[in-house]
Image 1 (spheres, rainbow, N blue to C red):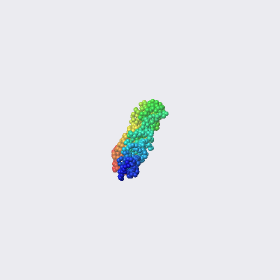
Image 2 (image 1 turned 30 degrees about the vertical axis):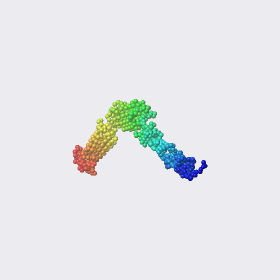
Image 3 (image 1 turned 90 degrees about the vertical axis):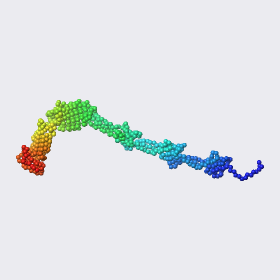
Image 4 (image 1 turned 135 degrees about the horizontal axis):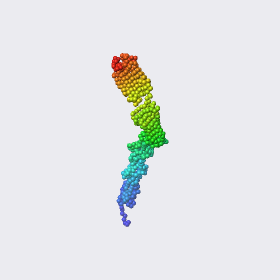
Length: 631
């Protein structure tokens, strides 16, 4: 009111306090608001006394998040920059220092390119994947667009070996809990190997049952094997070997009987580990009938039955079979081959030519037979008239039943059995062997100088006998009957071979070789320089005129010497043997070089090896003579 002037002394009063600043520069008060500029801020929290509020232009803190790579770890880091924040009530300014925080870590990547976070799911793109396993820190899961691994199975062929290979491509697989991504590297694995095939086109595999089925397209003409614990199976189109039966083929009028044969094919082993290949076999020609009208020819075992309806009237057969021509095949010609044939002719008026080879021709009807070359057998069971046109020495006639009577007709030999007749053309002058109910017989023309007596116990060789050997085994009908052999009228050198009986044998006028064999024989050498072997048993041997060599053989033998018999040698004198000498002039024995010699008239007896033996001479009546040798 202008009435007074009051004095105010100096005084200080704190109206407001701002704590946490480094300077008052720029701090201003506007009413109750204190502005704290950035220059005054001190990197700490700022507060104000009651009744006031704060304001500031200090930089507020900012927060950013980003991926960074450390080796193969991708870290998602949140970074906060230093700054100031005014409290909502204006009472304080808080200071946030610089800071960083790893929110998530993904391990096993090569890059952070494209890695993204969506909530708690981290997507790892293919570009970041590193060919290893990827994991994530707790609280997060993963996702990826990386290529997943794929598996393919395929056959490959190298030469004749097929390999079934499982190939897995490289790729990534997210685990079921999405906590990891596993990496599968590229790989290949041989599941099975099949050897011996030509292609993989025919191979089918069941990996569950571990079976490989092989079809025709893959089969080669070789054995197929499988490994790796697998087994094999044959597809339905794979040919199996089959056996084709023997059968006839007819070409024109030639019927050929071919053997069974096998087709080529494949067989699965019992253990199913291999498939064997069998080559085809070739049918062989077993028999041929030329002159056939049909191929429906019955075959049973080794017999082929041929009926008239199947044949022409001229037939040639070959092959190792028995050809049985039925009774209705008549007025026909049958020819054999160059091998051994068996032909049965049951019809009448049949002409059979066996051809070369040792043939058996059976005549059950009637006809003419020509055996041809070879040792043929003519078998007859017939009441008809039959002819053998070319009987040879090696052939033989066999008569089924009855005994044959022999007779001649001109130059032919006729064998008659009941109502049947067999005419052997030119057989009169041949040696013909035939077998009937009485056994084996040999017909020989007696004009050859051999005469048997009616009983068959004696044989005389006449002056017509010109052979150099007489052997009883050449005469089957007599060989075991003959006791006496007389060759005194034979003028040529002769070898006589007796039998096992005790024979009386007289040699020829020439040099003889006589074998007595097993019996107790009486052997007379006759004229000539003879060699006599008594053989076994107790023999009596007389060399006769000429210089003779004498062997008694086993047994107690008697050697007879007559005055004028020449110079004889006893080659095997033994204890028990006797030397009987019928002569007046007998000299004393002499010994030289191991032998003993008795001089008898103009001749002598030499006992080979007798120098160490006691030798007593005997006279005509068997009495001892004074001449003896003592060693």
